[in-house]
Image 1: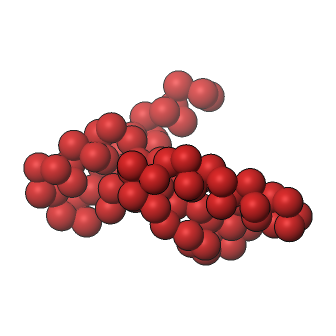
Image 2 (image 1 turned 90 degrees about the vertical axis):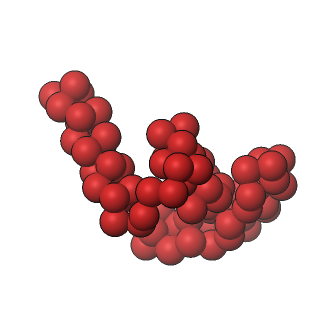
Length: 78
């Protein structure tokens, strides 16, 4: 779960995954996609997600946490 992912923002398909210590490689790969005119997004896990994984939180709980965080952030942008 603690992975950097490169996704296609239109389909949300994961194109590549990297460990957190491979940040430079993830940026290089994203640049390669951009040079091929493929629009991508780099997604880094939040510090809360990283902590949850380290503490052994299961995927369903982590998904619920992400939803709650997104709702909270959205409520401040309205």
